Amino acid sequence: MDHILPKEAELKVKRWPKETIAAGRRHTVAIKSDGTVLAVGGNKYDQCDVNGWRNIVAVTAGNVHMATNTGNTHTVGLKTDRTVMAVGWNNHGQCNVSDWRGIQLPGIS
Image (tube, rainbow, N blue to C red; front, side):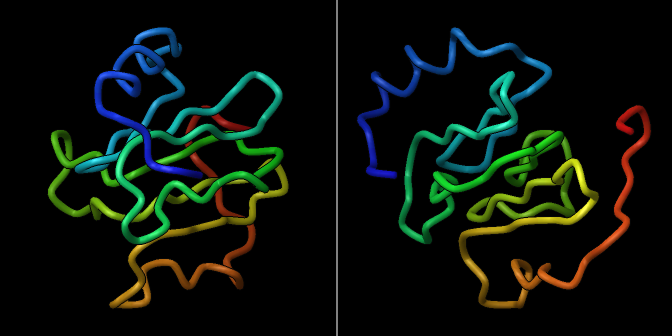
């Protein structure tokens, strides 16, 4: 996804349902009702490259204001088949999730 200006991103994000949003340091991601993912903001480390993501039930983007143990330049998505996808800065292997299986979140079946 191409980088968009902050004001344009702000206008897009204001229309998203709050429970489906995750925010990183300079990017925001959201799950659409069809299970695809949108991303806006900085894309220096490809953290907004979610165009091919499908069947996603949860996302995180390093919610830096709510937790100290999450990143801020990568995006992680949980799929309906309980596998995980990740894009972005991978200097410490934080996006190496291709072998993750059977991941569950409370309240998400």
